[in-house]
Amino acid sequence: MKTVICQTPGELVAAEQKQPKFAPGKALIKMERLGICGTDLHAFGGRQPFFSYPRVLGHELAGEIVEIGENTYDMHPGDMVAVLPYQECGICIA
Picture 1 (cartoon, rainbow, N blue to C red):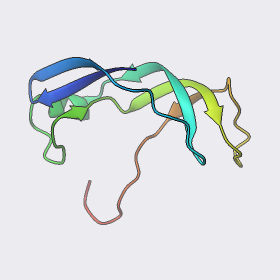
Picture 2 (cartoon, rainbow, N blue to C red):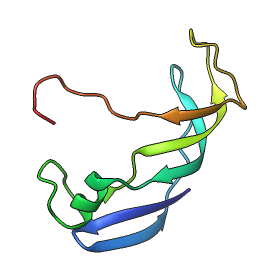
Picture 3 (tube, one colour):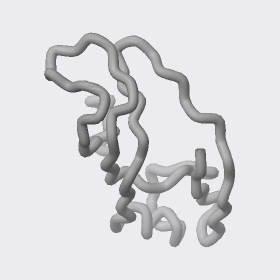
């Protein structure tokens, strides 16, 4: 799996990482598109106080479901999806 990692502010590195394995309650998605937003640009510029480095940037994602377990959303392999990968802690401002 190809990734671009922001090692430190101003330094991007292309890297290969292991493909994640399917886990119950999750979906394995083949990424087709990735957006870079203002938050990513701030992280690259060293102006994102909530980020630590190294960090894989890009959180605006779209792709195809490759594998998915039982779910209540009527989602199946082959479905195209957009992904919102955030889960908030409910405590901090971020």
